[in-house]
Image (cartoon, rainbow, N blue to C red; front, side):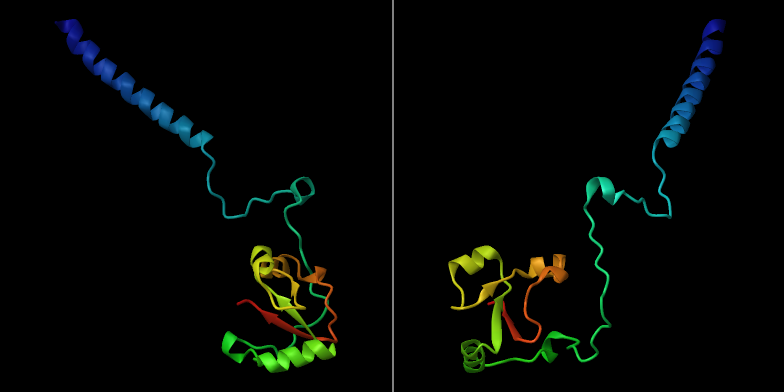
Length: 132
């Protein structure tokens, strides 16, 4: 009976020490959050493309959707027919294949946002975009 009085508290103490040791080791092995971002080399993964602006932003650009100028179907058709404009369908390629305005070209909005410098549109020509 005397051995039990000694073995039970000793066993409990050892278990508590074991749990504390495991907890300490677990905290050491778990990555801790840092305030600095983790950088991944793009030379290996090549996931990021940085596009530097080549000119100052235009101040006359619309600030919201309501300020974007609208054109009528007749104005767009006349501009396209005369060569003064190009009509760009910014929907997905699948939507363009199903149906599109005759004479329009397909440049999905995702492509424009991903790499705007890759566009080969004539900047002197009126560019009319549509998505519906």
